Length: 277
Image 1 (spheres, one colour):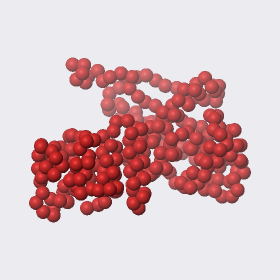
Image 2 (cartoon, rainbow, N blue to C red):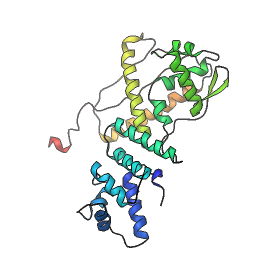
Image 3 (cartoon, rainbow, N blue to C red):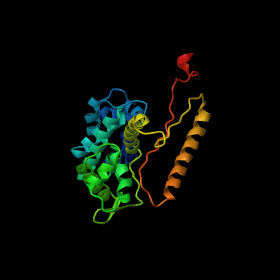
Image 4 (tube, rainbow, N blue to C red):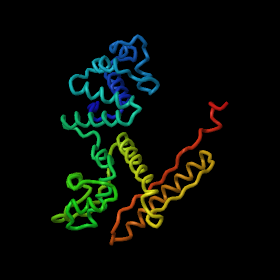
């Protein structure tokens, strides 16, 4: 059976543990539940199927039933916290704790670079801006940003971007972009990107009054749709976004950093769902 450090879903880990034990001798859900202190003989089966959740007070007994001790037990606790959490902040803390445990025990679980890259507009903007300004000091780069960022922050961000492989240093204060994109686990990346969407959305609100109409472009429509229309529209928007990136990549003599947001969200409930019956 794989090390627990390779898992990001506690339901899957518990199911794999059960399957492993069962394949190596007589083992049942009833026995598993009894070892963990549950009176219901099928409760852990329901947990593994995603039909029930493992409560915080039951994490330790279940971990003990599976023979987890030390860092493995703590890693399992973080798995459960992550799997049960509804708030992004709680999920993020759990993922970073999982990574810390895994790193200390020589295993890579998630890519925390994604969290740092997406935690502020400063990272992607400076990644785009620095190659346009060969020889520029951090203070020079900071002064070109529309939103405030200090020279010290720019210096630290450049160091991170180089270390993480998002920028390449070609000489003294000369940078170029690498082909590397921000990659993380499917669990962590949506959390990181949601934080970026919120921040960039707030910047867009400020841009309405901050810039002249010839410096920014805003448009929108409010419309009624069905699910099929929704799927077609997001497909069109995704294609449009890719085309925008392709257009930008056609040009080499770049002189400014822009952000484009696509937002498509509900303004009403579904009038045909049961709560309206």
